[in-house]
Length: 232
Length: 228
Image (cartoon, rainbow over all chains, first blue to last red):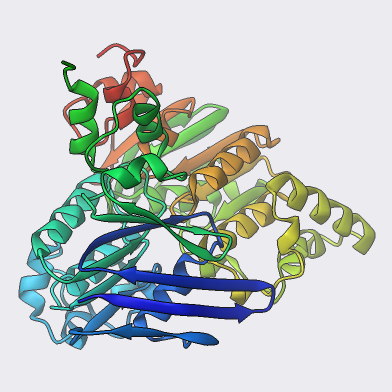
């Protein structure tokens, strides 16, 4: 289910976005500084923004889904039950899996931001999308929820997932790493080779690479393994 | 000293809590009451029952900078320069004085290039940086930041940390889900189920959490980590 950005460009005022890239099936991590164009990439990939030039092409993608970085942008229901039903999902199942059971008739605006994000991602990850674009999925979540989201991403086991994030610690194992550099999408390649080319890698991963202990992937488990690895 | 006594509000139940000057970070699971506690300290919410005093005064009588966890809820005006200038205009600073302070805080925040931008066109992280500059522009006594780092890259987080460390605020109270950042605070408050379950220096609090995902990963990886 590849997604192809064919000489794509997009301009808004002073900001200029370019991408010429192929997203193969698998999990892709996109990192980039604030304002570098990660959300623009997510919007273009999902078809919500049309590029000024070039084209976005895909095959075998029946359903794509964008999770925007602010969960409040997705909210349409007044209560938690209404919100879950708006996704075509069963409230009891979703509220149970997001540890919000018994709160279905509460006003959705009384949720903390982390709880709202939890509910939103519970809905997103229960939809069977071939292309899943997650813009800052970990923001506002506590470490247990971040780990749970990582597990669910791994358990999907199919399709293409694009994760745009600043998260430094709780990351899932990924197949590819990309960077947005001043509006331009740059490939670091396939993991694990990509890790040593990842200029925006978290400090602890950079330290391991510099010490010749590059991890096999970017998850905390892979990082711990690299740290404790014995050398021949 | 920030003093809370007999506070019960929403999920919060805090019989007594004293927060000394310096940087105090509040950590805890989603829904544990972090935002409620921050709003009470900022004077946005008045607890019933309960008493809150900041250097002996009501929070409403203290100059406080506040940053909401929802980035869009911080922004009122159309352009970045008007947004940052707004607290100065509300207190009737002259336009030249306001402009000088806006330019200064924008320069220190590394966002001078955003001053002419429309706030609605900012990225999530840019909105946070603009809101922080707005919260700091008056040089408040108390700076209260609700997950200000959740939409920032590492470089911007470093900038934010430097800004708030260099600020003139006597009290910096903030919450985060970034435990690496939390280790830099003077004091850590762990909230669970609305109650303060741990309070102390980062070493004192995190040493009790070695079996928990809250324990900073860098401490697990480092030979120089504090003793556990």
